[in-house]
Length: 210
Ligand SMILES: N[C@@H](CCC(=O)N[C@@H](CS)C(=O)NCC(=O)O)C(=O)O
Image (tube, rainbow, N blue to C red; front, side, top):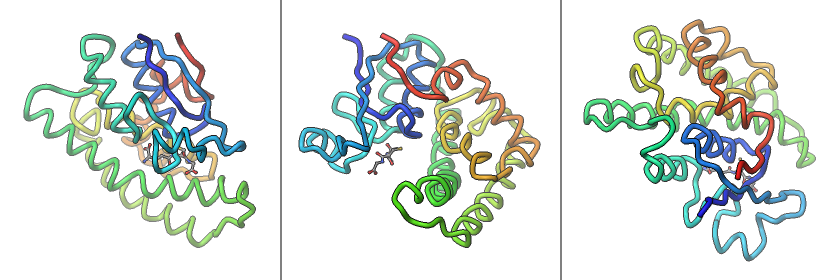
């Protein structure tokens, strides 16, 4: 049975999952949840995803959890995105944790401040935005050191941890931040991720592939 991804075609978290479907070469159906119509707040949706957020797949929500589920379910096809060897697995888990702790909080909040507050008829707060970007830059200085010694965040092979950076990292230029492109090793790493056919296929919006 073809899997059905419930999400929004422009949502960052939905793109995180769709990228992994592309990497694993798994065709999927796509059901759009229309935020403007409040579909994510309907009783039917909340029964599946109690936080009223996209995406979800079958019985799993949270984009990173869904990505890991897809990786394991389709282990035998497409790109291998989690190492099996214990040492490499430890380094992968470390990289996945780095993304959640040291990366995501800053661009996701900064993008929200600059791009999404106007939709909610709120005024972006420049001081909050600048403080978030400053913190992100300090974290990316460390990334730049790590990536001077290895090709990817978890070692020399691409993993889910690298791909998880794509949706928010790709929005940084749109909010006027060069935090990625101004750091040479981070820039090279991120470009190699953005150039992957998986990201190219979803970056402008998600459509079903089945
Ligand atoms: N940690 C969750 C975050 C999900 C999330 O923030 N989804 C956003 C779209 S990217 C959403 O549904 N926003 C609508 C809302 O919160 O009302 C994940 O990774 O799936």
